[in-house]
Image (cartoon, rainbow over all chains, first blue to last red; front, side, top):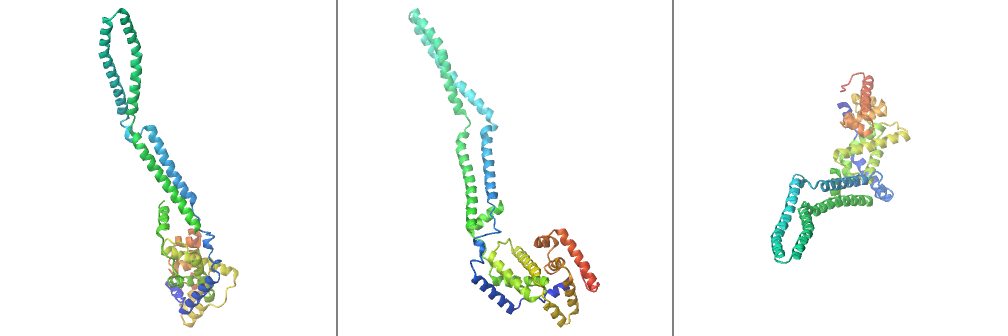
Length: 189
Length: 173
């Protein structure tokens, strides 16, 4: 519709009108600057979506904490595939010290028996009594060893955990802090 | 999320400085005046609307996504102020444009203007934004806060009415 555009092209801001309008605008703004600038005090249209930012930060926090919890339960992503081998290692390593303990005892036992034979029957009876007593002792001594091995054979994820926790906490804290800063600054405006 | 990061950075890095009234007048003065005149048919009232629009611009200092957003915002404000003025003021009888066109003996344009003047306000504003500003019906619907289907049907009816008035003597698209 070029004719309509032609019609409208006759409507123009001339220099006189421009000067007049600029003067009126300037005087109006000078007359009541506080009353005419409500934006600083009452930002009607400027609504800071604080809930939105807080929701984003909370979502991130939930996701990260959830991931952390899942990793705790499963034993970590890096360790899931090798978990059986870790436990196998723990079992085998728990057996080895126990076997060593048994071997040590086996080496000691003949010596003890020889000592008992050389002495009287009472000493032999005492030696057998010692043997009977030492079995539970052996088991008891093996147990802490096994326990120690299991504890040591636990996934070395403990060494990674603090780093992960720190990283997660830092990210969440940064997001929450950013949201709060934005809210405060927008409000002050 | 991206807008959040952008706004966060904008807070500390600072956005572009606000335009002065003179700059806005230079770039959008004619546009705002024409929008106002299409509603009010009177230069004095149109000038008042231009002045009020500039005051609103300075007072609210809105954040724009780009020059098109700024243009649409100014047109929207000018339209709303013009409609308010129509509501509460009597439309003056003086139509300088019609007089000028008649004075220039440009009958075709005078007829076109008279035809458009006879349209209802809701058709007139759609015609102006479509043909003068070159907005699509979707963009017009956002500026006028109406449904796009309504804008399309208003445009269609406006064209029909103009054709009837001008008796298909002029080249309308």
